[in-house]
Image 1 (cartoon, rainbow, N blue to C red):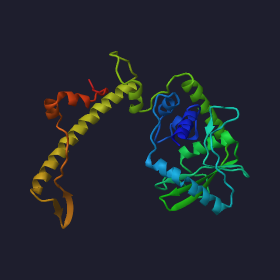
Image 2 (cartoon, rainbow, N blue to C red):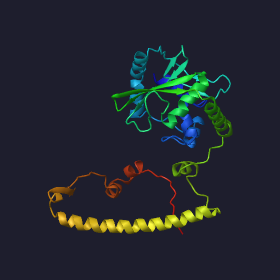
Image 3 (cartoon, helix red, strand yellow):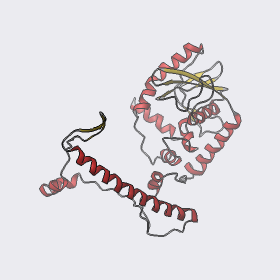
Image 4 (cartoon, helix red, strand yellow):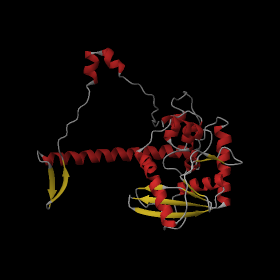
Length: 298
């Protein structure tokens, strides 16, 4: 089973899958374009399966079966990864396929209904819109069904019709990413601090001249840090008064309503200084070193 998954992951690195598209377009809540680039170029280890991912996989056959029974549509499950007939870098690993229509069936689970519109419409979260459009591009499907189980008990089905203009835009964006970045070995521009830290973990000692907008950002950050410092001092002062008011009580109340608690907790930790003094060799075996950059304003 592990070898099968490894082979599947290896094939995924040979192209762009449906779950990669939202990240490439900057629409994903979970990944950035740089994350996708690192995965495709073998510079990032495979991510372990999360609990939501695991339960989504386990519930996939149940959701497929329920969709087929409720709508009277024959759905088959096809193993393996499909490729676009012209754009070989576009891959599709389908949850289900309705051959008579033909249509893609993409199963989802969600904790809440945020981003999901009226059932039966194509109103689904943007990152899933791009995924099913990608699958329709690869397979030539006329439409996609998205059955979703929300909050473990709210079953809905959405229908997304094929939009060739939208699909064309996605193909163009994917082609640019694949050829200009992955194949060229040029990482995309970082979009957040985590991305920047992965690209430039160390500084080179040089100075770079920036535009006036970034200079303004520095001054705004300086002002915000001062405000934060004032707030921290204010918070500390209030906390001091409250902690004194507790004395040895567990909670404080006003008008019979409990406002706050102040209870003892015990935490065990390793005294690294004592360990180093007692057994420096052993301490060194478990000592780790990390490199990071610190932003200081001048």
